[in-house]
Amino acid sequence: MHPFFDALRKYAVFTGRAGRGEFWWFTLVYFILIAVAAFVDVVIGTLDVVLGIGLFSGSLFIATLLPMLGVHIRRLHDTGRSGWWVLLGLVPVIGSFALFILVLFASQPGTNEYGPHPRPPQQAGADAPRVLAPSRARRWLKGTAMLAGLTLVLAGAVRYVWAVHGDSILASGKASMDEGRRAGLSRGESGCLADALWRHGADNPVSLASSVSNGLQLRGCLESSRFEAHFCERVPAQEDVFGAATWGNAACTLQGFSDPFCQNIFQSVVRYCTSADRGDKSRHGQAGRGAS
Image (cartoon, rainbow, N blue to C red; front, side):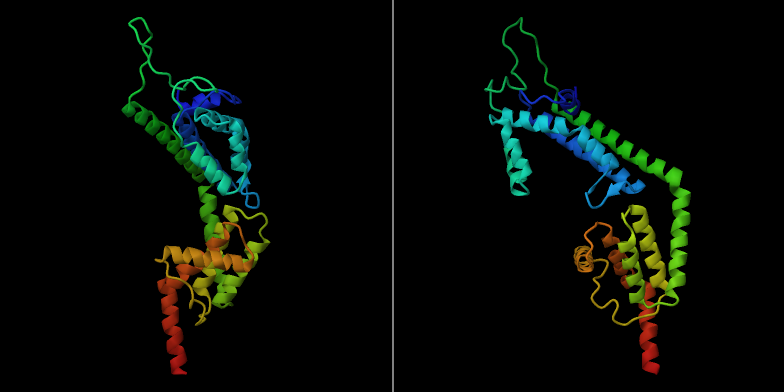
């Protein structure tokens, strides 16, 4: 049985020992499943940005809370430590890091006070039952197959969402761009950004769909907006990924937003300020000022 399913089978077992293989396989698959569930929450708008968790990811977290707690306790037992050390995980940052270090320790040899070794050595003697450990290649093959299966599940979820909602997504995106272009005819570049920030603040709760729509509307508005010489002065280049992300995060904080979708607004500004359209506006604007 694969270690992940073995840990699930021991749903609320807090006694005994768990080797590093059982612990790390369970943890890896758990985080992949949580990522898939969070992706579904973001796509269909069931993510609560205040709590940082959604309907599907929250349900999965609750369903696997006891197995996750159990495998942590059994892993600590395997290193010869009391399961109460798991409470370190409640201490932000430092406690979680300390718990991470503890579960890295190797298994104690033989039997300890919490039970026999999770992988007892093969018994000696001709009549002893033969225990064959799976080869490293076979373990890698099983792990690769599981990861491939989870990737297919994620790809299937994306394909299903696109098949059901693809046409409406495209139509909605075009409508947002057109609405933004019409608004931009009577606004300057800073006015387009101010409108986008207002829409973002009025959208409660914020969802991926509304964030994408707002970003497209801002993009259309900026394309047709009036040139303002100082609008892009401190905006990083799009090629400076780290600088652009840092600038966007600081701009969101300055506006009083802490949700992850706010970055989309300022990344749209970064793309616009680096675009050829903005360069043309800048050249024409400078030429107009010089002629006057």
